[in-house]
Amino acid sequence: MISNEDLQKALDLIKKSSQVLITTHTKVDGDATGCCVAVREALAALGKQSKILFLSSLPQWYGFLFDEKVPVLGVDISPEELSAGQFGRFDLTVIVDTNSFSQLPKLDAYLKQNNMPVLVIDHHATADGLGDVELLDSQAAAASSIVLQLYKYAGWRITAKVSQALFTGIATDTGWFHFNNTDSVVFRDCAELTDAGANPSEIYHDVCQSFSPERFRLMTAMQNSLELHFDNRCATQFITQQDFKTTGAKYEDTENLIDQSQRIATVEVAVLFVELADGRWRCSLRSRGAVDVCRIAQRFDGGGHTCAAGAFLPAPLKQAKNTILEMVGKSLSDHKA
Image (cartoon, rainbow, N blue to C red; front, side):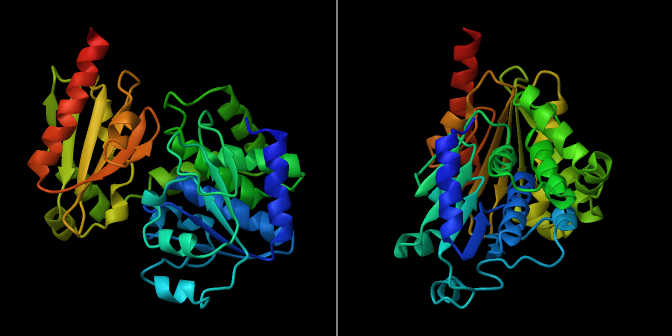
C-alpha cells in the first residue's frame, strides 16, 4: 500500500499544475490505458487541462475506453515538436505503469531536458527514479490499483467511465484473475469498481473476444514455431517480420499471445521472441513462479515482475534464444535442486 504521506505529495503536485501530460510505456496495454483514462478523468474533474500521449499505437481492443484517437509520439507528433511545445506547454508529466527510461523511447530526452516535475504511478520492481513524486508498490497487482487508492484518498468521484478503465487495468494485469498476483485486494477493488459502474462481461468481450482475422493468423504462425526445452518445462516461440507481412497483423497484435504456451501443463517458463523492424528481438518472459524472469530481463536492461518481464536483445535469433535458454535452464536446475 502507498503511504498517506506519498499520496498527499502526489495531490500537492497535481494541485499546483494546470497543463498535464499523461503518458506510459511503449507497447501500451490494458493497465496502462486504464490508468491514463482514470488520471485524465480526475484532472478534468479538477478543472485541469491534460493530454494523453502514447509511445506506440493503441491496440484496437482498448479503443472502447476512448472517445477519440490518442496521438502517438513519432507518428502524430515528432519529438522535436513535443520539445518545442507544439503539443502543449505542460507544467507536470504523469507517467503511469512504468518507471524506466528503457520503456519510454523518444520521450526520455524530453524528460531529461527540462525541469518539469514528474509524478510516477507504478507497480514494477524495476525503477529508474523518474519521478519527483513516486507512488510505487511492487506488491500491487496493477498500477490501476494504485490509481484507485489515490482516488479514494483524494475523495474523487469514481464514475462509470473511471470504473470501466480501472477494472480493465486490473483484470488484464491479473490475466483475468488467474495470475498469481491475484489476491483479496484485487477482488475487493474489482467489486468496488463493479458497484461503481464497471461491466465485467462487456470488458471481457471487448478485450478478449475481439481478435481480428489478422491477429488470429499471427497467433497460429507463432504456435507453429513452438519448441519445448528442459523436459518440457520451458516453451519458446517466435514471430518474425515476415509473419507480420504474411498475416497482415501489427506489432500491437502480439499482446498476451505469450500466454498461449502456458496452457501446456508442464511449462513453467514461457518465452516469446518478436522481431522488430530495426532487427532487434523483443523477448517476453512469463513464469509460474519457480523462475524469477525479472532477474533475467534485468541482465539486458529490461525489467518487470517476478513472473512477467521483458527485454530487447540483438539479432540473430539463434544467439538470442540460446542466451535466454541458458539462463532459464540454470534457474530451472537450481529450483529443481
